[in-house]
Length: 294
Image 1 (cartoon, rainbow, N blue to C red):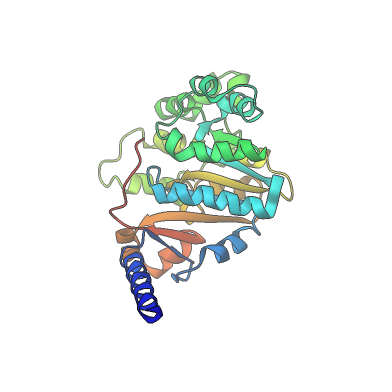
Image 2 (cartoon, rainbow, N blue to C red):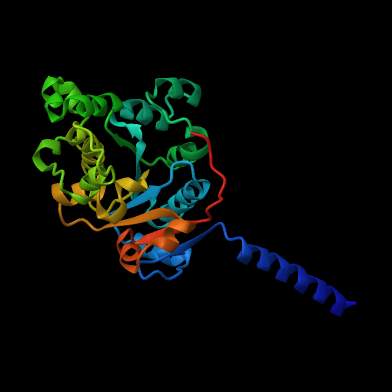
């Protein structure tokens, strides 16, 4: 009887293991293109000043790993951990701070947050609530969308039309460091082939205004010994471009690491050089993964 039970247990275990191996939801890879364990990744990332997580906005694996990584970072860094996110505009910082401090409940907070993303409840609320529970800072790093739209329409000269109060919500280094030949912005034009619009420079500048502002508020809220865990679309941090490029320009010397997300079919097409440079760690997700609603 004992032998029979042991055999049944072995078969059930084997079947479950086989299913998990046949249908993995994701795999983690290092820069050498080798599978790496989650805990090893955390041990390496925890040594950073800032960790940038490049997500696919509606991919549930990205969002699940974000909250799991937040918990792991908190175990090591405690109140030295703080968050930043593309999904919150800098003009919303006061409301976000008041909510985290417990001034009012979520029903009062949500209507006050401008341009709140449609997938907040499923994908970003868990991080905000974790920050609230642990009394951690959460920084709204992105440029207000209305100002990015102005730059897209009028170019960098739009900044001269804004009030000093409005300019406090935008990274002040945009005019100083913006370079349309940088990979992240040059590729925006090159990918359009022969259909580059006449306002391409404005489009590139508007994109840079987001990166520069997220970099600025990341740095403004960083103190030595902190660990910033920043959430953004992967385009904003892949290949050490976007936000990371701006941080290195504004304040060189910080140890910055990144995690990105790619689909299995994308990973299969990438060269060894691309795999080595896209990020410190890559989350490769099954192509047919279900998506959340935005």
